[in-house]
Image 1 (cartoon, rainbow, N blue to C red):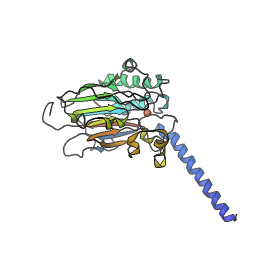
Image 2: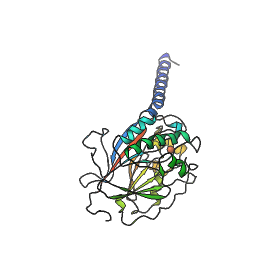
Image 3: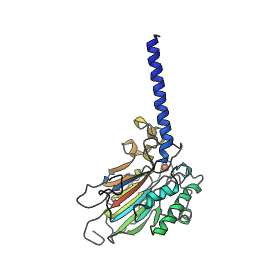
Image 4: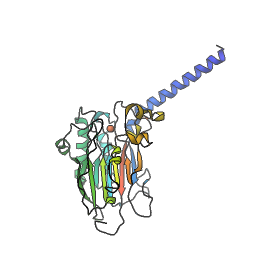
Amino acid sequence: MPAAVFQGLFIASVSLLFIAMAFFIWAIIEPYILKIEYVRMFHRKEYAPFERLSKDSSSSSVQKNPDLRIAFFSDLHGRGCRIKPNKLCDALVSSAPDIIVFGGDICQRGKSIEPGLNYLRYIANRASQLGIPCFAVRGNHDVLINSADFDSHGFHLLVNETVIVKSKQSKDYLIIGMDDSGRKPRIYPTLPALPEDIPPKRRIAVVHNPDYIYTVGKNDFLSMLSGHLHGGQIYLPFKLEYRLLRGDRLPMEGVNRGFFERNGIRGYISRGCGCVLFPLRLFSKPEVSIVDFDDDSEEENGG
Ligand SMILES: [Fe+2]
């Protein structure tokens, strides 16, 4: 082999090695970097249907007084979460939400539930001092964790049930918490009875796996919050992380984070806070979502 070709191959190999090492080091660091996403789902007529707002809560594009603000987080995965409880808690309460909602996956495969529950207790204690109620739904890793576990750590678990939350304009919003069977194939529960006097635009479903969107009728609710997909967690080209490890439908259709719309329903998928399988994240930073809802209709309730 000519010396020049050998030299070229050597340089290319060393470069590739350095690039791979840089990605690997970044994947170790990224689980410690929490990002707050400010998003708006249903809101006043003058805005687009939904949008990602500024990264900075002091920006004028982030409303100072939304009708309903939900601080949403998901996918702690116990020790798989590298964000310190106080940092996570600060991110959740700093925007003065009306409620805090956890979107499921406390632990990894039902094992070692205490670290995840301790996060919930820490957050709930602080929220309680501020008068912010906390709710949760289970994820596919949580099937062995019961309502008493959640309630004793300050989060009220919604198992295919609803709770009414009063907004700043004294309008009723319906939070619909749907359970996760955790089985393969996953069995999606049917919706509970929904009160007629709260319109679909003020019904917000919280369900761990966003594929749930394919199982519901168009006018049951119009907004949905989910987690589960970790934004891919470790980015691989050609969606390999989903082709190899998961059988979910939305990622195969190109959706693994952020906003999406199916069947007339608007959803938002959090990237989650922790890591599963490996304590690594690549191009999918841990997330707390501050989600604003507005309703400019005149009626008190109904309509
Ligand atoms: Fe998860």
